[in-house]
Length: 191
Image 1 (tube, helix red, strand yellow):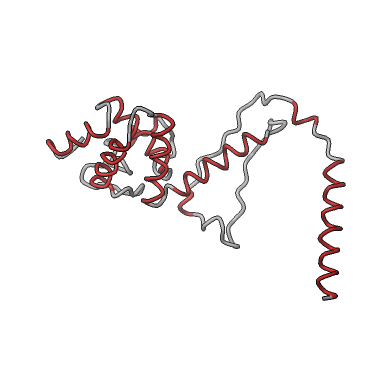
Image 2 (cartoon, rainbow, N blue to C red; image 1 turned 120 degrees about the vertical axis):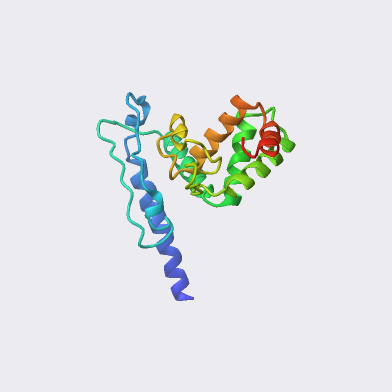
């Protein structure tokens, strides 16, 4: 009981110290707009241990020349990193693709999502590392040549979100909908 009371007082004292420090922070730097863009170098994420492991190496980003970064920019980077991490599994990739379709292709309904699922299941089983050594096709959409995906991002080898975005834009430009792309796949064996 005595230990619980001391622990409670430490928590209250710690919170009070934190709030007093927080109230002295000068936030005027956060009022300015960013004049330069923050670029994150292409990392070989597959070579790094999982982020939530205790021995994971710290990831550093060079903010040289950037005076401040606002919270919304940081949250967008965090969201993008979360999407990439999620899309590295087939179920996660399907979820990310559905989210992208809902926001970027609102005319595509659930039947289009179902066609996309069938199409990319037959192509790569939603595996972002899938590679056809005979043809050179790569990734979830099996882009041929794989370097086509560079129009979306140069990280196409390791970023399933880049692959999904490219695949969806390719389907939209070439066929209009995933169901039309799937029909071509059934007729010809490729799309």
